[in-house]
Image (tube, rainbow, N blue to C red; front, side, top):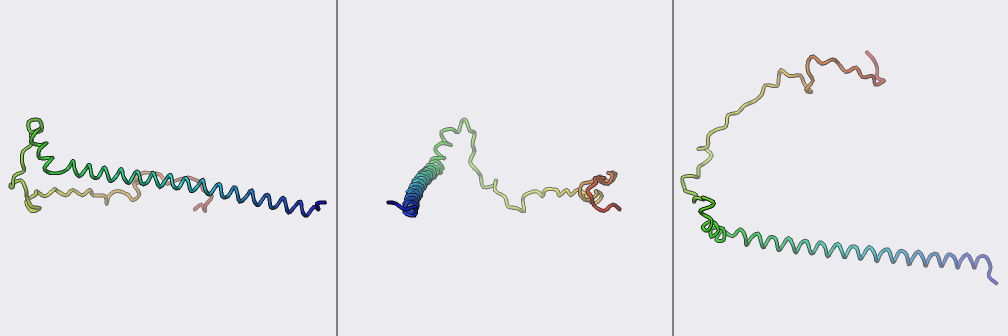
Length: 125
């Protein structure tokens, strides 16, 4: 009735169908994961946008001035006056201190340190 070649071909077709189904199922799972990640990214971007809007509202100069006026007694803030601004020429120069490293040996090794006696299989002098 069935020859051996017929049975082998039917087995190959069933295996190919199973492989195709498995590949399709894996691809759909990966696509679902990608869509979840895209939704998470969109949600994070929306959150960042909302936080930027909140930050711009919280840092408005008019709002900050009102808060400074309300809490003047606790903060002891004083307005900035024109004489408090100076140019670079008016700032005192910072003294420059340079260490003399010329007397120290290179590599941070102490002068009295003995040479390395580790045997590595190299040529001995």
